[in-house]
Image (cartoon, rainbow, N blue to C red; front, side, top):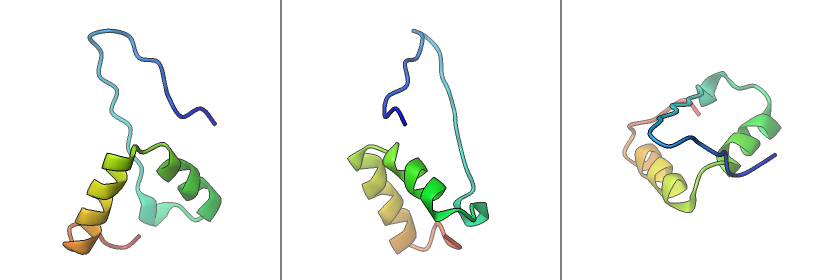
Amino acid sequence: MTKELPLLKNTVHLWFAFPHEIKDPELLKQYRSLLTEHEREQQQQFFSRGIVTNI
């Protein structure tokens, strides 16, 4: 799986998933590996504040 996806200039790509709906732990692990360290830190903050649940 590629960690970086090339994007064209002046474009925005919004990708999302619903982790609580993902039943395959390996797929969830692959999705999390796409996040940068900063994004993983933000995710942890959401979990610790109760903003994100059911994962």
